[in-house]
Amino acid sequence: MTAFTEFSGLDVVVNSLITLALIAAPFAMWHALLYKRDPRAAMGWMSVCLLFPIVGPALYFLFGINRIHHRAQVWKGGSHPRRFIDFERGDVPLSDIPFNKNRQDDFAPLIRATYALTGLPLLAGNEVAVLRNGEIAYPAMLNAMNTAKNNIDLSTYIFENNHFGHAFTEALCAAVNRGVTVRVIVDAMGELYSWPRISRRLSRLGVNVERFGPPRLGSQLPGLNLRNHRKLLIVDERIGFTGGMNIGDRHLVQQGATRQPTADIQFQFQGPVVAQLVTGFAQTWQQATGEEPQRSEVEQAVFGESRCRVIVDGPDFNLDKLSHVLLGAIAQAKNSIRIMTPYFLPSREMLAALQTAALRGVAVTLVLPEKNNLVYVHWAMRNMLWELLYYDISVAYQPPPFNHSKLFIVDGEYLLIGSANLDPRSLRLNYELGVEIYDKMLAAELEGEFDALIARSSMVTLAELDSRSLMTRSRDALCWLFSPYL
Image 1 (cartoon, rainbow, N blue to C red):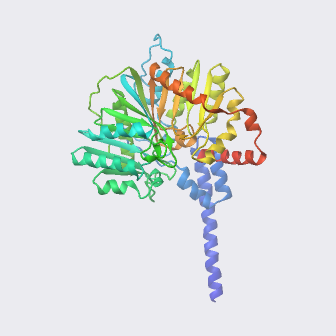
Image 2: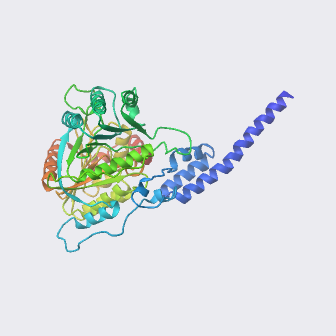
Image 3: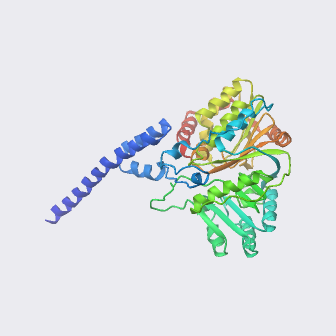
């Protein structure tokens, strides 16, 4: 009787699993078919659900569905978005675009296109300072926080629990004690790069800190694969810092400062564009807390000659905005495109745009790290670099330390800087923030550094890639196969 009972119980479990697979797998496959815009992504998820009818739908539920429901779109004046659909295609405010066809500006079409995508004007009268590495950037950021009178807003992906992490913590705590309104956003995944978590220490010291996207079950699960990669510090709504730099000792490059130094560039802004940075932080804060964003009332003074505009990007109504701007800038280029990035896994569209630019006679140069901190990303990149070299696009490997900088320069005047890498994670899954800068003097300064770096870098050749062994080519191709998820 006991054996029969056990057999019956096992039979019930098996039948339940079969029933679950018959329901969950077709539903997940139908959902991927209906809502995924990329046929490769749709086919991939459908294949996973078909081959693994129980595990596949579970993975799709956790990683494949965009659950972001954003109230910032309503704040902008739009209607409540439809879940799943609107966020898969983004929001493009194409109406009422000011454009003077007679304006003598080489970048006028790109200026119009970015306005169409963002709804934000290109603002003149900004001063932009380049802060190289933690040795220069951190003292400038700490000085701004130590002199804050009204408010400090900080968003970062990684906030390390070490010397400079503690220095930033102390500055934030001191500001709170002075009566300054302080808001801090730390990505829940990025925070795990350093232990114990810095958010606990900040919270104990009275700092208003929010973890972005902490894992949780329930209807508000934002997706385990979506991360806030934006790096922003805004003080008194008058001075802003953004770029690719996280907070911690990793960005100290002087010899002996840290075991694995990471070079990077941070940018300091003063002028009207700071108001757009404030709006960018407000959207991130709303996403992390659910609080309605507040409009900035601070009137911004004119400081310099740079024309700037902020581009907020993410897997919500801001989807694909950075990608479109990058493609527009590549199409606009007449003479040169210079790209520096730690991770380069472009979409087929971007790859084709760069190839076409090279065919038009544009000098395209790509600078990558010789030794990457993510070796599997380095291997994946090696698998596709021949597609650039074949079209006479120059690719250089810069020597250590590992360089985390992101620079995109067109025709010696246009720059796009910020937190985004040129890979699927940044341009499809992460919340990112970039800034367009039109400034010939600043571009010339950075191009000079770019060329000096290339002079001491090693150029990648097609013959070198072709000489890889069959095992190495297979390894690189396998990593490249998973590039949308790296």
